[in-house]
Length: 108
Image (cartoon, rainbow, N blue to C red):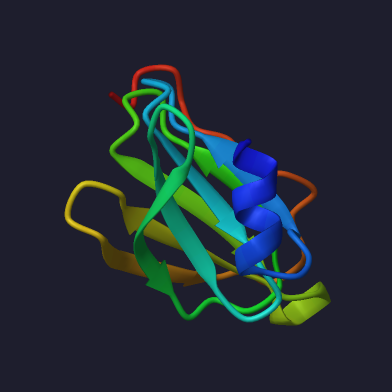
């Protein structure tokens, strides 16, 4: 049911991550990153961020922050989003392309 909701709204999903509490989902599309609330039989759109071609998304252990890796090579960046206030906190420019991103276990 959820995959049908996403198929109707967008074309291709580049990355996705489920909040640790299981109540929300964040998906990266070609031109945006969108947050959805998971309801019983469907998804409800909550917010979107103008982050293009995000290749990796990961929620913090507490679920209040999301790290988004986007760009290629020396143009790679990591954006930190607040999933409670629906704001972008900071964008970190990297000097090389990171292989993966992760949160510390004590981040909640």
